[in-house]
Every structure is written in C-alpha cells, then in structure tokens.
Length: 430
Image (cartoon, rainbow, N blue to C red):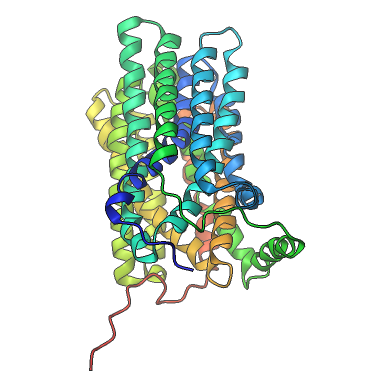
C-alpha cells in the first residue's frame, strides 16, 4: 500500500534533520571516541580493541529489527531514541573528567551504539512509511547528503573544536566535556523538534505479533544462507575491507602521535581539518564518481579498477610513515588521495551487497549483508592496535598493504551479471 500523500515541502522539514541526526551518533562512536582516547593517553592497542567492539550493534542489528516493528510506532522510536542519545552524550561529558573515565565512557559509547543502530532501523522504516515511492526516490540524495554533512561536522568540525579548546584552555578533558555537552543539548532539541515535526503516517503502526511472523523471520534468514554462491559472497563481504578496517583504526593515532613515536605530530585541530573535513569531502566525491561511472559501464567491468582504487592509495600511509613530512598540507593532500580512492572503491562493495540481496527478501537480506560488512570491520580492527605497537607504524602500513591480497583472490571467484549496475537505455517510443 502506497503511503498517504504528503507534500515534498513538508518532507524538507524532517528528512534532512532526521538523517543528519542519524549520522552524528555513528561518527561519535566510530571516530570521536578514537580521538578522545588518543588525546587522553590510552594506548593504540586498547583504542583499537575496545572501539572496534562498538561495531557490534551494527553487526547484529538485523536480529532485533523486528522488535521495532512490534512495539509502538517508528515515529515514537525515533524521537525517543534521540533523547536517549542526548542523555548518553551528557553522560560522556560528565564522566570524561573523572578518574575512571575509560570504563564509564565505554559503557556510554555502548549505549550510544545500540541507540544509534536502533534509530537507523526506525528512521529507514519511517522513511518508507511517510513518503510515496516517487518521493523516496527524490529524497534519497538528500538523505545521503545530510548523512555526509554529519560526518564532516563530527570528524571535522567537532574534532577541530576540541583541538581549538585544548589550545585555548590547556585542559583536554574540559575541551571534550564541552564538545559532548554541546551534543547532548543538540539532541535534546532534535528529539523535541521531531516529536512535533515528524508526520503521522497511517501505516506507521505496530505489527501484530504472531507465530507465522516469527516463522517468516527465521525463513528469511535461512533463505539468505541458501543463495547460490553464498560462501564466496560472504568471504568477499568479510575480506574486502580487511586492510581498510585496520588502517581506519590507526590512521588518526598515527596523525596525532609524536614524531619520536613514528607519528606525524599533528594537532587535534589539524586532524579535524585535514582528515575529518578534506578527507570526508574527498571520500564523498569518490563515492559520487564511483556511482556515476558504474552506471555507465556496469559493476563487472569496473570491479578490478575499483579494487585498485580501494587498495593502492593505502600506500600513501607507507610513504607518510617513511618520510614523516613536515609540510602539513602535503599530509592533507595525501590523506585526501587515500580517501578519494576509498570512496571510489567502496562503491563496488555496496553494489555487490545489493546484488547479493536481490530476490524476494531484498530489504532484509541487504540488512543482513550490512551486518557482515560491520563484522568485517570489527574483527580485524580489534587486533590492529596490538599489531601496530609490535611492528611500528612503517611496518604496520606495509602489513595493511599485504592485507589487501585476500580480497583480490576472492574477487577472482565472483560471478557478476555484466548488466548489473549499468544504466539501462530507455525503451524506444514507437
């Protein structure tokens, strides 16, 4: 059944703010936590291990997604969870200056992670209920844009702000207390705003629980694992980002670590500007370019160029670790090149998930695929800090280059329809 008609003008009141608020908690859990702990003197081993565990809610998100359907409306889940996120941010702000900050902030980041993953489920479901199919297509770019803006605001703006406050006050915990306190206030306002601004679609009602629904739930999972070639598909999902998952956990510590420890000795402000702003802009441009080029030539034809674009730019970190350049703009350019390639190459991964999800249970199977994607980031990332501290930065980045090889091997086993991903010509009018 098509959702009740709602004006596109009204959709502009909530779609941008909904997806911006979806992106901020994710960035806080995945990126701000790493910079926070590095600034507060936590070892690379502990940073990589414990922050990688925070991926777990996104790994197992499909397991509890039916609960969002069964209890209350998605509208209530959305603004209620935004208030929970605000409370968790307030908790981080209050515990950062304390003597046992590492333990308690990790607990609160776990709450943020579960709240954010559940908010994703509710927001994406609400989007389908509140907009007609033509409006869904029209606003998909708006969703993506505001999620990316949240990444720039978080990885760039908030990291820069923390660094600036550290410079002005000389007090690292106070700087982060201010940042997370500001986020708490923002999400209190966002939750209240969405309690009034979100529409009330007729279809947004809790589903009636029944044994047939539960049987269908398990059957959907079983159908995913019965897909032809699923073993190769799962291997590709797990190893495509094997190198990037480790690089991602240590790139920020590498930029922040002093030169006598093998790092580049950048300030937190510089990391926020170069990696969190220029890097994310390059990542976005790479993704846009990847989507357009695949639409012209198809995924099968572009798979190997995208693999190369994903993996070869990792070599810039080998170069940076060897040379330790003094010019920060050289570092900014190198990071932008790596992120541009990552954005371009990651498009192939997302399209392959869509290919695997094709069939009767497309939405559910895509969600399962994203769970394996998160697992492929979580497990290698957990050991990355320990590996780096034993190898040093130069050898660690060589190890990252070596870790690209499994994805190249698995890619030789993939079977992809030549037409998949390519824009089809419009039917001729006669």
